[in-house]
Image (cartoon, rainbow, N blue to C red; front, side, top):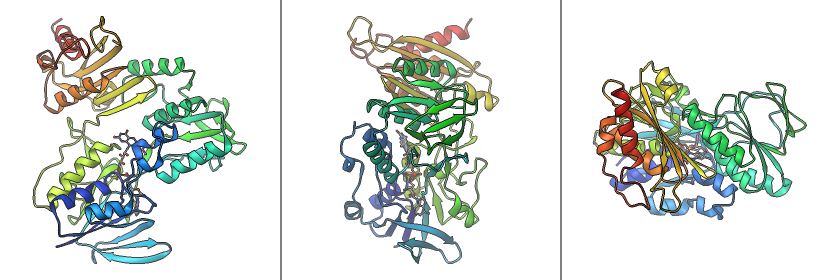
Length: 446
Ligand code: FAD
């Protein structure tokens, strides 16, 4: 038997603990988290704030239950301060008392921290970030007590847009600001324009090409780089995250080019007895092998499996990421997998694209809605590089098919061959996926 210590008890940490226990009944597993909660549903937090997920408890996993189910010793409110690689031990702070614990294997899943820019007035009582249950509780308490009527979201990525929708559903007047020229950067500009139009239909004020300059009046006024002033009752900052790498740096573990923790294909850091996973690690692009950082739940779960297999003596390699993502923005669903125009240009890859505007299912059957599919591929071989899908219905299915096609190394010529199941309720006899393939082929043959 061995002693396994895990740092971080949520997306990656709790998952790897549970995953190890499935096959290893004997090892001692200790799980540390500096916060008061473990294994909570962070992805559900915006929806609890908006009232869709009514019960706070439904986001939580009680420590005793986790301990009982997986036989894992859980230590919450216990921050791991340092790693001593020679002694194979960690130091941690539990309620002000510094303790030490030895390990045979150490697994780091410390996640990431929301970026808070160093601008004047940022420390005020009305500006929030969202990462932990404690953050969510602070936002909920503010909404309950201060009764804001106007909110500003800074950053139009996943968390910004999810918070926007949920605060809007509480009848707050909403403004969203991003310094880049488009909303949500993992889709192309033409797809992002569809989202922008939809937000404007919902009476959201969208401000692009403008960044946060300073806060005034205890956060009640925001000044932007353009000089524009915005009055607000509360602000959500969602401008990105930085991986938590301090423990790794202090222990002289290597970081990768992106600044996240470097790991091999079995998720081992430069010390083979220390693994790392989740938002804190650098991964490889599935198609190009380029280093990247991806803060999503699927990678953390897959990496947990890779680590538990490796501890068990199996060598299943981690194959890298497409970074498939999906997001609800009011009535729209926005999904992306693999590359888009910007990322392909950044990688110096020459590509072709095809855009299809179609319908989610047969137009004569009620409820048919518009869907836009954009695919990116190699001009010579037709190999798929990526896809963006935006629409109201059936977006998740089209994106899942395309993500599978890319991982299976399919080409545009394979898309018309896919038999995806048809009834007018769900699709058309030629599914939009088939049609975008035919369209790409005809464009290639021009
Ligand atoms: P986390 O889950 O954040 O866990 C890290 C934990 O480590 C934290 O609890 C932290 O307290 C602890 N910790 C850090 N340092 C120490 C230390 N020194 N000692 C002890 N403990 C420490 N992904 C999706 O794919 N789909 C979604 O819809 C989605 N929605 C999201 C919504 C929100 C609001 C947020 C915040 C994230 C969302 N994500 C989503 C991202 C997903 O939740 C993360 O990618 C995933 O949780 C990463 O797991 P992790 O273990 O790396 O980090």
